[in-house]
Length: 374
Image (cartoon, rainbow, N blue to C red):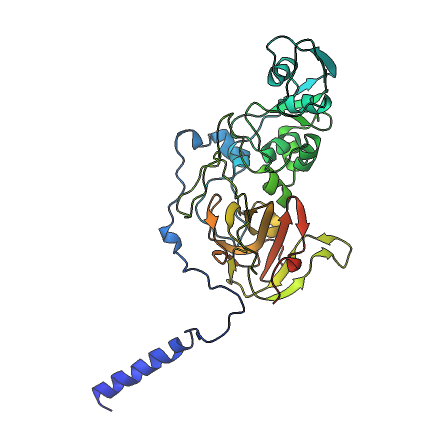
């Protein structure tokens, strides 16, 4: 064989295996949109704190950011509840009454008594715009009241007192979007604990509901949440609250295609499962089920490993767990069908799989009732 013949033979050997990797354009995709091209991680810029966004050394010791073994993520700041820990300095207020003075506002009454203005309004049946008049007697509900400072989150407040955030939500009748304001006094249920700050923090167990309802930092009086970023290269500081979508755009699509190995509802031993598990090969692209904004990307819930939470508007939230690689950042806007992570077996996964949840407000719903038929 001549030189040209040898060259032709080598080309055939090189091209033959490559042709097996070329997708067949005629093969039906069954509604599974192809993910956008993956951008190499080398293109991502690391988070660089600016001025007041840099945690001090004491905050660094409070709880270092942790990534579970086998989970890789884009460079990111610690979540707000780690960057802005809370001191448990609630003021205990006795139940009493207060006579409104000329010029008083409900907030001023709260400042004078130490109670939350929202709690005073509830105790006296006051509705917005919360008008009070001189000489009016107001009942002041007793309890422990924590005054919210800049950058504090519901999760950090709950952790400081060793109380479930869901109990604080219920005690203060907080509603979606669960926004905290600087200066707001919130009621801490239960009695003061004699345990140390470390013991109270250890007693707190982070869960999905906490992130959905209590992960955003408090806003100043006239402050607005920042607009989400379309790129993972713009990393938002943990003290910046992110604007959520108001309306769901379009319907939901499957985040992966695979075999469902665990269904929504009671399990074999009676425990309730809040989502579904889909077995897929490791490294499978996980797609956003609908347009939305990333509320969380990390591994703060050890059982779920690599985790992404996306808010979609109209109270809808989707949850994606057990990922091996996280490709989005908190505050990033995503489109339906966009790759947000790669599947894995992180956390307490039994196999390479995706843990997928859908929530309407705080209530988990069956994804199979919301997603199109396979």
